[in-house]
Length: 492
Ligand SMILES: Cc1cc2nc3c(=O)[nH]c(=O)nc-3n(C[C@H](O)[C@H](O)[C@H](O)COP(=O)(O)OP(=O)(O)OC[C@H]3O[C@@H](n4cnc5c(N)ncnc54)[C@H](O)[C@@H]3O)c2cc1C
Image 1 (cartoon, rainbow, N blue to C red):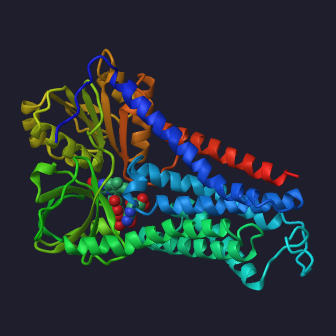
Image 2 (cartoon, helix red, strand yellow; image 1 turned 180 degrees about the vertical axis):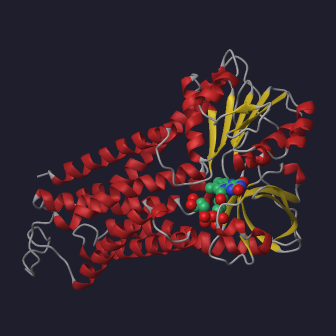
């Protein structure tokens, strides 16, 4: 594996920006087209129009069901779905898509004006609604489930149950929601009950079933066939561990520096797993190292659950926090806390490949005792053109490094000059830190395309710069879909 070099005669950010803009535009068009497909197919059936509110209600429900299928597929750890944009962006899209779907389905049952009546002469259901008792039941159950699932996900942090409990209930609830919704559409839908829309709903169920089978069947089978054994668990700072694993009976597979793995302890068939960035470089295989900071039940229990020799199961590799295909005159790596894990993997890879471009590493911690890998970084500075800045939020007296947070004020004097926009930036750490760093880089004129960020939490609070752009993108697509639904409702 070799690190990317600058392309002569062309600004690295130009190529990156063009690639990202094309990917975003393609994504937007594909999403809007998929979401509009059921309404377009319904329109093509040529049935006589009903009152516009009834037609709009059906169109919104069909659009929402399709959007929910897309949202489901995005969360299913299917690499071909999440790889082009990165798994954290895919998860954010999953969350953003659920919001308009919730809104549309909330109003769906309240918008119908036609009576529920059995009139044999109304065979196209232009004057009555075709609602069987079974369809009423599945529709109601799907509606209630959605009203519970989406708010429970948005306000998960404020509800006192474990992340794993929420994740399992969310997955099972979403699967039930799709099954109930599709039954309701097929049984009660004026348009969905017949081909080609009935086929489309069959097709839409496939990625949902695949997503579930992938996470709970195919991945565990693959994980159980390629187990790992704990070589070492070492406490290197307060509440911070390095976990070293060795491939047990296989070569360890392949990964790119900066990627992450889902870890299961005990059994590959456990329902819950946890994502951790690989901190070692690929060259160290068949050994692999993680840097883990205690956060809650799973990480705090590590000393009890992963004694040397214990079996551990990895689903890997995932993630786009990698050097491949990216260009920059230099590299600035910015890490907060455990965000140093994938950054160490990149640095170790750069050192192994004899990287010659300048590299600046900025690491943020609260106190000096949390600084890790200091000796190795000093040694690396001799092999790479590397400058290391340690930043402490609460520095001890006489601290020779920088003091403060990884915010615009701290970062401004550390940015490369004279052309920071020609460098490549890797940022990993808590979400507020990533947002602050992206803001600081934005002010320095660095385009978003030159920044690669890895979020350790999929549930961010205040939307950052990247997220605002994604929201604008999906807002545009949602508006386009609303227009299609309105045009369908108002046709006559
Ligand atoms: C791509 C990625 C890479 C990561 N790399 C590292 C790393 O190298 N080192 C490190 O210390 N931490 C890393 N994390 C964070 C780590 O996954 C969580 O700290 C850990 O799962 C917390 O579990 P817990 O039971 O100890 O704490 P909890 O109190 O249960 O969780 C704390 C928070 O972590 C998140 N979380 C918990 N469980 C999961 C899960 N199963 N899947 C996704 N998110 C979860 C949730 O946002 C939760 O609110 C990474 C996270 C992601 C998404």
